[in-house]
Image (tube, rainbow, N blue to C red; front, side, top):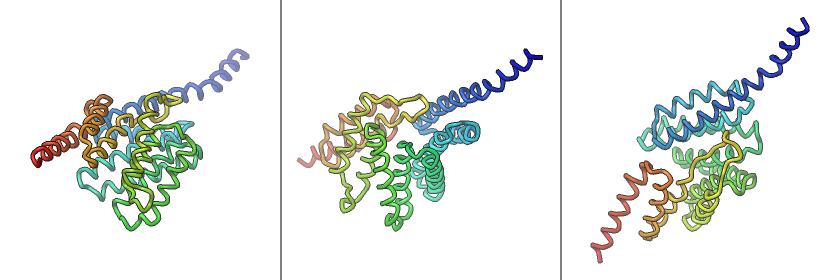
Length: 261
C-alpha cells in the first residue's frame, strides 16, 4: 500500500511537468512550421499551423506565446490576402491579430515581441481605413516605443520600427531618412542575435536588406539596392518579392536610366 501511494504521488507531481515539456516541444515545432509556411508563402500551411496553436492555447503555461504565434499567422495571412486584393478578408485577420496580441501583452506585460507586432498591425489597419490614423497612428507609436524600451537589442523590433517609419508621413516622424537608421541597426543586431529560447520568435533576418534595398532604389542608388537584394536572397533564397518583383524592377530602372543618357 505504501509503495502504491509513493508511485501515485510521483505520478501526480511529475505528469504536469512531462505534459508541459511536450507542449513546449510542440510550440517549437509549430513555430518552425509557421516560419517555413511564411517563407514559402503557403496560405494553407499558415492556416493549419494557426489552428494547431489554437489547440495548444488552453494546454500551455505560456499562453502569451500561443497568442503571439496565432497573431503572427493572422498577420501573414492578412498580408497574403492584401497581395490578392482581398482587403475585406485581410482586415478580419489583422483585427484578429490585434485581439490576440492584446491578450499576449496583458498576460506578459514585458513581452516586447508582442508590442512590436501589435505596432505593425495597427499600421496595417490604417490601410483599410485611413481616417483611423488619427488614433491608430499614436497607438502604433506607443506600442513600438514600449517594445524598444523593453528590448533595445532585439533586431526584429528595429526592423518593425524602420518599416513603420518608412510608411509614416514626415510630419509624424516618418520618411525614408528616419527609416534607414532603424533598418541599418537591425542589420547590425541580426548578425549576432540569438533568441534566449527556441520557444521565442526568430524571423525577419532578410527583412532589413529588403527594405534598405527598396530605399536605395527610391534614391536611385542601383548598386546599393542590388547588394541589399543579394544579401536578402543569401538569407532567404526563395524570397518571392525580391526575386520576382524587386530585382526585375531594379534591372528595368537601370536600363531606362542608361537609355535616357
